[in-house]
Length: 377
Image 1 (cartoon, rainbow, N blue to C red):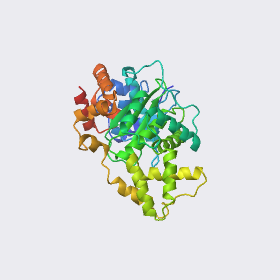
Image 2: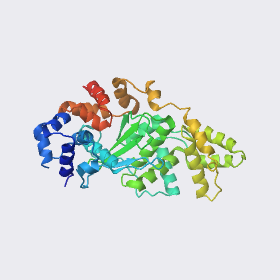
Image 3: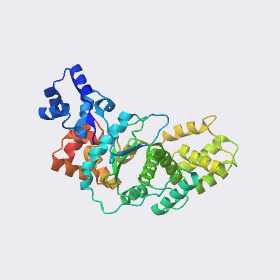
Image 4: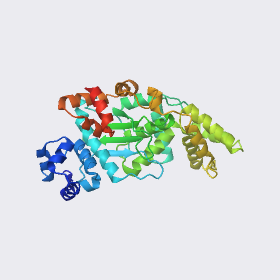
């Protein structure tokens, strides 16, 4: 069974907007016959057209689509951020992006006869997460107290056949800094990483997504909680947290404690807040007193100031927040070892796709999508 359009809502909305089926077809860049079949529920729109239809009619997916969950439904995950709520519409939009990605699977240059190893029976408790993180650090090839460089993380993603999709989504206050899409039917993983965030945040999101790659069987809150714990343990391992805790307890001045945390954070290229949380996770697990830098909000103030010292990844890579399409596309291959734009080019060339396909796939404004589309062609 497949999703279907809510014909009653579709008809009501087009009537409210004074749109005929012919005008709607013109606005969407499809034939009048296609729109007619949609209204009769004979044909379900392609994901890119469905996204555009929702925009034209200014309808939420929950109003436009009657959903029927299928076994091979794309599995999507977002890194939790504060108290921001992930809406059903946003999840459905991400799933539609996953359905579009399924068209690109056949172009992937990966071995399709085997799959990289995943964690068996993952659970979110301190000992298990630390053990899993230690194992991955060993596979990546870093010592216990070493920083995990971006190049090592990227190479590990490549070895896991996870496709990185670098995107320019601006500064977001919601969940659009990282999006993970797993396609069960092809067992492929696609990871959108927003280049418009700061270095230490970017590294944490990469580590977070790595947690998802290793646990495709975990979904929803369980998957997010595990990935969050895994990222912290991977970047700030237990031995380092223990050493930092012992150091902090020898100081009585909270700002001296803050400065030491910042030193560790700078060396690891992670947030001071991440270091602080891992130190206290270690303390709690071993029955030790908590290092309290939250009551008077010192750690949050220090992290805010720390953040100001870092440029967005986009500026580090391109020297600007608005790189030319050629440099942006080349970045995927040269900086992230990703085949994404190569396979996208093959698909839109062979299937004669339009710029709206690129817009829907990358979730970017149409003008930006047109520039990327023209560069690919």
